[in-house]
Image (cartoon, rainbow, N blue to C red; front, side, top):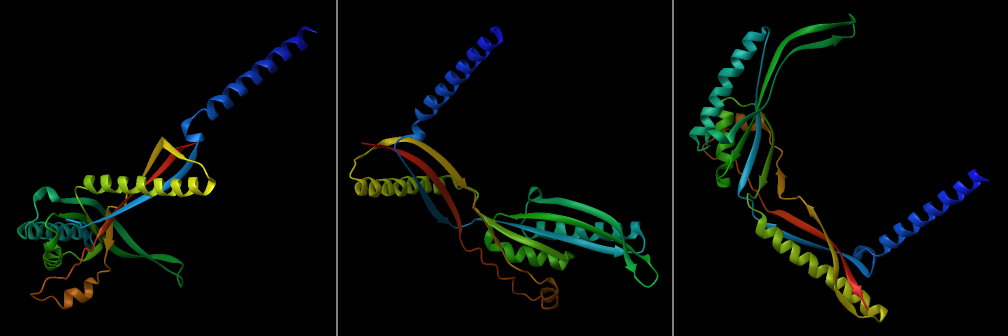
Length: 241
């Protein structure tokens, strides 16, 4: 009997806790009223470019492959700095040295093919109009791989503020349309949750190094950054009267 009594007390306590949880959940502002979402999107012009390029060298000796790479990389860094890039805007992103081999299906063995060294650099161009000139300077100095170019705006605070306002108006218009359709009046905003879509970057450009290297001329590589977009999505709960 004593054990049965304890079980009844425990069950009663659990029921009380569950009832309290449901009551608390239903009293949250985000779970009452009418819930809508709104999105604001603002286009801005990028003012900065980020170039990812590399110097790749090969040789039968690891030390020679590394020495060649060091010489060419130093020349590339000096060339882009001479073209207007600050020292702090050039950084090594990755460096690798490995032995190359290829599997020979006829002999069933891996054939040694020398060493490959890759020095990957990131170059930040703060005067976006000079992006093509910087690429050309790097290629002429010895860079032989370019993985991508990213364009972005350094200051997006004003754009995000504008996007927030657009998102709220979008949500409010949706809520007003629903309240009118249901025959009720719309009250004040009870709850707002923001989701930022980090789209301030715009990636660009397939870049054919071999073709550009053969046709290098006095005309800089044409680069068109276009526009970037920032967007904000809001989840808003409005009072429903």
